[in-house]
Image (cartoon, rainbow, N blue to C red; front, side, top):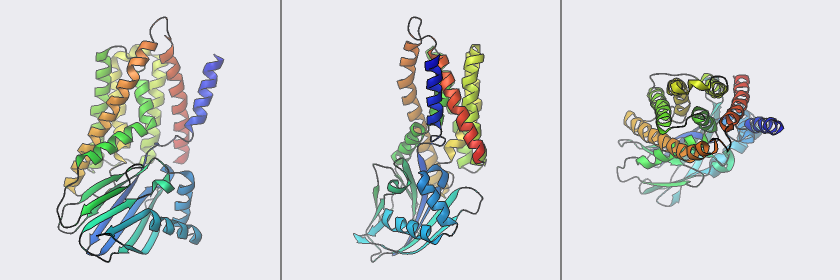
Length: 349
């Protein structure tokens, strides 16, 4: 029992800094008009490295020293060139989104010596925002379909030929979806709680399917603008869903037979959380649908990979003669972490 209590306390300590997704996403647009570039990056300050987040908020509030530091980051970590000629940064603005949330909008105008050739983009924002920061960028050239790129810690550069029309590859958004689910600790712990008592393949399939179908529905509706639920409501509800399922494992384990229904109900909420990675990218309708499908496929692939890795050892270890109380222990752990997240997210509202 002492070991159990110690483990729970350790988990509660660890849960604090993990109150948000490990992976945070910046949404960028780049408008290319001849030799003039207009770059915009929108960041949720509370989802990035704490120090960087405070600096961005302070700069957006008008602090001159903070604004100068952030302007320097813009020049250093978002770099562009056309035909191997670097584009020169010009006017920079830093402001809040004006919607009363924690978003900060960074704008930078650039002028380029050349107007045709290969546009090279370098995104080094993880150096400032944290190692798990990723940027989704939409590049828009008049008279052409937009092209989207995903920049990650280990993939920071991209090239676009301005002389040809090219569509966005699916793999960038699939990779983003995989990264988002595997980096979203709250979603993964929810899956652990959902599957902790599952013992057969059919139970596992029905639970995962219920969750998948439900979050795909709300993800699609949110990204397409049909529903709009603020993150200050969604994030506490996600934490509450984790606590609910974990406590149900302890108090009503016989409910595993209807667990697929619980997975579907709470999957609707988690889908709204997934949507935060795409909803503000200002994509064209065609590009948005393409991004949505690729991202959704990536989320499912990441989820399947997680289930394949976690379920076999969990089932094996939970057998009589080994660790038959392991599901209950995991549920206590998950409930404790979820409770901490719930409190922190409610306090942040």
